Length: 83
Image 1: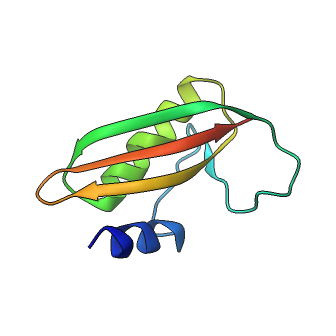
Image 2: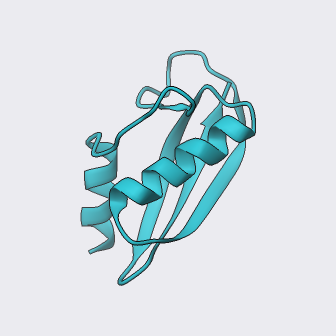
């Protein structure tokens, strides 16, 4: 189940609004890693990725890469943030 959640997230199953950071899908584009953010208690993958995106933007990131997504009824995720 963990691999399935991560796969779905990495395949771009998310909505990014204008006030959030963009999902980072290419490690070689020269962006600088500035930290890590996490989110908990999301009911859907979309909610989890939106929470991670919002937290990345609050930290000044322009993009992020989801590292993990786990959980059963409530989801928890971690993402690296880039500037």
